[in-house]
Image (cartoon, rainbow, N blue to C red):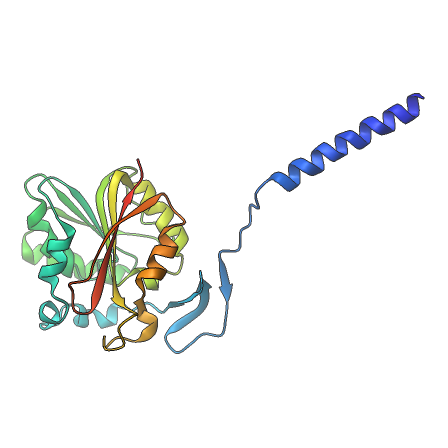
Length: 242
């Protein structure tokens, strides 16, 4: 009977090991998939949408166009952000620093704006603009494509203006942003309205409110409000759970 008992013990042990392996979550979750690249995309899909190509630094003049304030009503965006003196803000995908320079006075005294971009050329343009403005509370930061590279629990607010749809690694960037946000900190998506065909922007560079909420739901975020008063964009505000 000893051999049979040994076999039973071995079988029981193998069953336990197999069950444990099956119970473990997959460590290689396929978040992205390939597809034929469209004219404005990179051939990479995330949560049902193709990721758009990045607007390169060569298009920086469009970010600083004179009519931008009027077309996009930046004043309404600034009001929607509810900036306060002393807070720390990150402008993710800051480009030339157009929004950073407009946010900076509102966080003073005692506040700070991290102007973050993945393109070294944009960082150079941003720093030149900050130097001309004399706004010493703005600090430029070169990020990676999958990491904003900001200190943990350092941000009261992070804002992405017409940026999120271009992130090559949206899940990883969002994960790094959540680490950088303080508990209760806010994360704001500003995206051209995919629901409005009259918004004169290519479709792949727009996002619907529903898609934004769907992608944010993967993280420890609670939807707070959506501001729809801007002519071309919606402002979708989330708060990090404590």
